[in-house]
Length: 66
Image 1 (cartoon, one colour):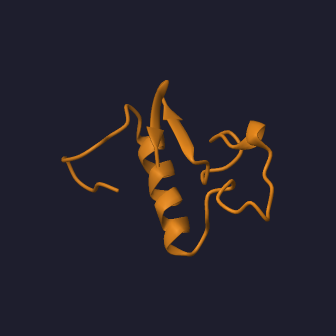
Image 2: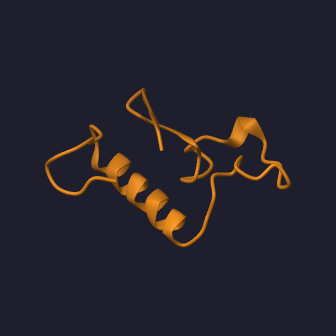
């Protein structure tokens, strides 16, 4: 995660806030929905529309792996 003017930035502030939440949840111990095979998560819901913990995150059409 980057803070300040250097590093990756999205075109909107919403993308930056969502990435910040994603990283905070990692710091609190949360995983990506599909990280644990013992807890199946529907692949069609592994997107930012359903969870900020999605493994693939898209801002303005650009794919960014988190």
